[in-house]
Image (tube, rainbow, N blue to C red; front, side, top):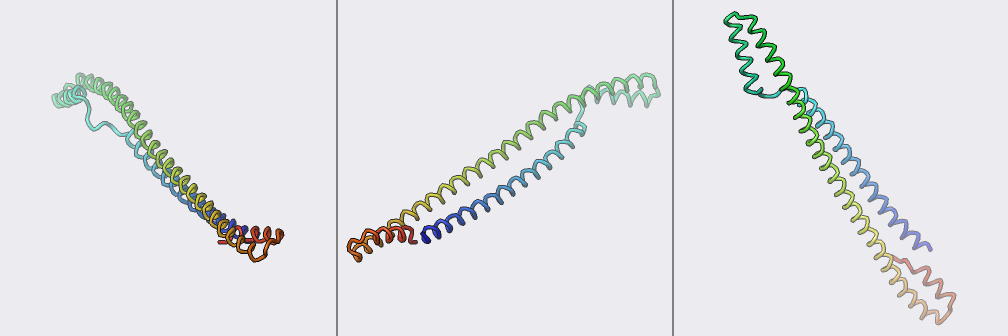
Length: 177
């Protein structure tokens, strides 16, 4: 019937509007996540190429020893100290990079967990709202059917038993809003 079609059209538009808003929110959320990931990646790359804030006391001692030997013009000993310091620095830089890589993995894991949780919350809220809208539609349909049945009963009394008229009255009044 036309009333049923109008009822369905109105609720279909509500659901379509809701889904369109959800798509926009999800797109915005994913864009924000992509921007956060890009920003995090840039900062993690910068951390990876940085030197440690402090070297170990052993390396610092080798560097001081080299400076002292240079000041005293003991160049061959200073060169030996420099080679030792460079070897030690290389080991410390590798340790630093390994440690930073591990920290970077943890930071990325935390970021991905947070983003996954945000998307899960959004999906739960979206599904709950869609369920609420479906329930509201069902309730509205039940009310319309109930109101339509009351109108049909009144029509039955007026028509005094015409079966064909009763069927038409019920069908046309079923979704009166």
